[in-house]
Image (cartoon, rainbow, N blue to C red; front, top):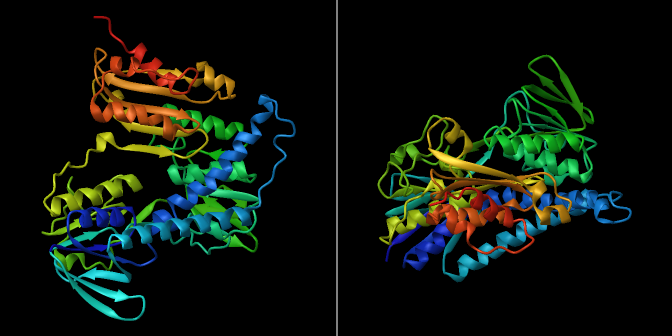
Amino acid sequence: MNRVVIVGGGPGGYEAALVAVQLGAEVTVVERDGLGGSTVLTDCVPSKTLIATSDLMTDVAGSAELGLVGAGSESVDLRRVNHRVKRLALAQSDDIRRRIERENVEVIAGTARLDGPETVLVDRADGGSEELHSQVVLLATGAHPRVVDTAIPDGERILTWEQVYELDELPEHLVVVGSGVTGAEFAGAYKALGCEVTLVSSRDRVLPGEDPDAAVVLEEVFTRRGMNVLSRSRMESVERKGDRVLVRLTDGREVEGSHCLLALGSIPNSEGLGLESAGVGVDAGGFIEVDRVSRTSARGVYAAGDCTGVLMLASVAAMQGRIAMAHALGDAVHPLRLRTVVSNVFTAPEIATVGVTQKEIDAGEVDAESVTLRLSGNPRAKMQGVRDGFVKLFCRAGGGAVIGGVVVAPRASELIHSVSLAVSTGLTTDQVANAFTVYPSMSGSVAEAARRLHQPR
């Protein structure tokens, strides 16, 4: 029987374990913090649970137009919110444990490191140690929040995104440093919960890595809702002064708040893994280098998830882990196709994307046609009081295959699925346009966008 050792129990690890068992392997997972990893315990699941509350507040705040009386007078008990966040995260972790234990996966609580490509040394949480031998090893160790020497988190007033769930009261004024996906999501969420929020962005706009039209919509919404967005403003330092924080910018300005949330990116958990002893290569940022089937430079050693830096999404981590096991254990393999990856920014409105980007088209890297439909013209959007957002489709010239799209809307994460199906299966604009949609519905805008890309024949 094949033996597989997996280091890390996040999506990349536990999904790989399930595939390996299905393919007849004997599997051991070594996890330091709890099954589900940071995705479940401190990152994705907690943040989206918090955002579920903030989304409800956003909906209620805008419901007076729909005839609700007294809308906007609600308040949030952050202690109860965070208690729910942590309870659901632990419950999800327990669900994963029960699932993989039912499949007879051995789970060891502890830390692990390589001693050559086929040996894993484990320091158990119970104080023991163990040496595991396997011809197949998967590293799925994740990443952790980046911090800098001039802004050290204290877990009380200066916080990383993993520490915010210990707050018992809403910050009076939250200063969020970093306007990427994490910074934008938390800034929007805490603003909806009732905080004064200042967002410090070192770039010309929020979400510099996302579709520019989508970023413009979101920044306009943030500003309209009263958020103070400081563009082209780089943080120099963050200092705690009693029950206040002082954020100094490189241009000499200072921003004072009650709390500061640092969203400065992620660092891979690759140190101390014994990578050099096994011949596993890393890039300049410490990310483990892998190919499209998750192989590292060491024979029999694979890697998946945020430690690889390949689109740091839970869905990508899970896919990398599944692909790794299929390849290692001789099953049919479909290499990772980044063009079909769907991503979502959980702001209000949400921003969902798949396939080629506007940047690639504008740069002449991809020959494509596009159309953008504002949601303000969608009948269902009008009924629900939705004005912000759009649907954008990209297709091959001449009304050919759909190769990408952007949806900016409430629940864009759900609406993007039809575009994702089109991209992954090579559907043409006519095929998308001719599929029935419900009237009235937000998804009707996807079909309408496809109809506008039709080329008469």
